[in-house]
Image (cartoon, rainbow, N blue to C red; front, side, top):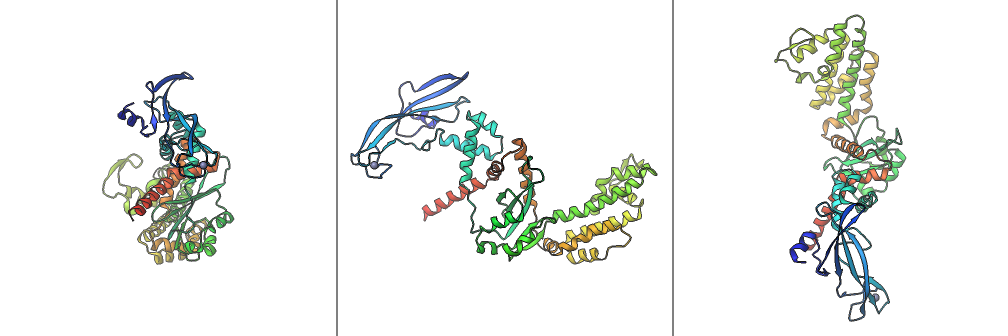
Length: 438
Ligand SMILES: [Zn+2]
């Protein structure tokens, strides 16, 4: 076999020798399969068992036949039928096989194939598709995944200044059970996926981190209903809670929307026109009033005349006093929030108009409980935005796999797709290069 062929096949190990008829095609299970025959032989430098330097003590002792699966060639499954020399060490009496960097010891798939599978796993294609593409079993793909994830170990001596906490539903089977995910709020690097969000569980987990690492955490971003501030007290004594801004805005718009629906339903029997308009233009109604269009008039069928977004909302507000009052309150709150004026924001919360329905006021006074967290959200820029992105990715992973039955498998896959493991590998490589340079 000439060098170019070797290069194409990825069999450039100098210790390989190929016979004249090195390629054999067999049909296995109605599938054409390539077999490349090769011989692996060399004189070992030392004994791999006792480590003694070879000065004639190690002799050749027959051969051992192995089969290594390679990357498919032009979509045909390809194997390397490798005859390895067996060595015998006279010093310690041990026997061992000739080795090649092409494949790890006691492994039947080549490193190259393993890497390809790992890369595909990180690209979030389904395990079955990967198995089919490379002519390996699902179990093999899974084993590669486990091996990759094994290289990831949390660094118990490091935590970032900003931590984002969130939860997600991991599996269909255990309904209502939520899993926990946390991330570096500044670099957006995923730090971990935990099976349970129960406080006791989290406490044990985070106690693994050194006290020094925990003291470094300055902010914890979390949504409002989560009880994580309980954790902060003893685990992260230097940390302040930041309420996720998205959830604050959501709480405001949801309250307003609820009042809109209530008003709308009151008109259902008495005034169908008002009813249908309140129903139809809900999106405009919940929008920031500053972003409503007030100049482009377009014919509107419901009003039977040209209207702008702003004009429509203004008209809707004439239908009900309370609704108008609530609308203005919410718009002010959102304005103060976006401008970062926490004093104005809370002044308004503390002086809500008594004409507003009691339940509605309660939804807003609820913010008083999270005053500190909201103030921090207004003064810093940290949010759980990056985590929401991760949560979407998790959803995609689950969908591609048609749901996971095993939490560990899902977690491993999330780590892979998030590049946690490959990032780590890259980091290590960089470190290696640096240390070599030094
Ligand atoms: Zn030996």
